[in-house]
Length: 461
Image (cartoon, rainbow, N blue to C red; front, side, top):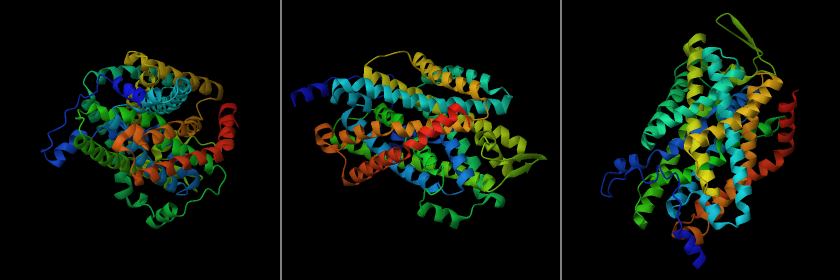
């Protein structure tokens, strides 16, 4: 116990430039004012649940299986709410992020394998941001995909521009970008009669889960990986420490409660946007061999690159020309906002596991180059008609890595040795471990199919 206490006293601040940078109102302030002070970290995390990887898996799921995988989106979102709340709880209660906790509380030999796995997850996520942003640039400016992928390296300048203004501005910018995505899909589903979904069919899909068709399991794993992202667990446990929280029990209790509200609000919005994308894809593409828009005929088959024609889901509301621009802007916003959170996660993981510190722009450049190289190789080898395949594959990689972040998180937060009185209660224990075991079981069950799909994407066919 003495060694454990000594480790508790040794602190390396998580995201030190943001640590304690947001003031919290006094305890006698109104509930709304206090909630506003704590709101934000879950919004940044929620961005990762609406990135181009999510778009690709939702679009392919809706196009191929209609509403058949909507239950996976709902279940993954529910698991995400509990798991992100647990990650926030770890950061508030211990003052450590998940990477720091693994470094301090697990044997030394585990640090390098855990760090490598976390970096693979961040690279897979950044591959999705690269491809999504490249598709957006291709639609907006007709830049060939090969060169559009290279241009995405310049987004390091965006990160540098925002970081100097502090955490609150980053949160505000991301809120605007996310709202851009949400409003478009809300208007189309709620306002336009032509794209108003069948609520009875949606209800049946939500409450009658099945994986009874070829390809469903691999895509379901991709949806889980696109929703419950491992690097977001590391990041959330660090972001909550950007609030200047007192160390007494009452202050921690309030912070945990407000962050739970923040998780529910942000991730419910993320679920609604992901569900809307899947539903619209089902309405527009499923059981449709072709579609004619503004005199142009689009033919759909098994080889259709859904992310490249996804703007057609907005044509009933906006018309073909405007839909292409609005979709591209929203996709670019999604990719860029996720880029910010991915870079922050990379910083948390590197500093937590290795204690190495590098300048944020250097960290961003390393991460982006690690994603650009495989994207260029695969696009150069197979052409630019398989972007959706690459996006979905990147999310499958995330899902396969997820248990290596989940089980340490639940181990730490379930034991009083690490959390004291703030260890998980019965609800979080059951929800957290059930989600982790379910995800691990899906990974094992779908691993052969995932490997076969990976080979198909790389080799072609």
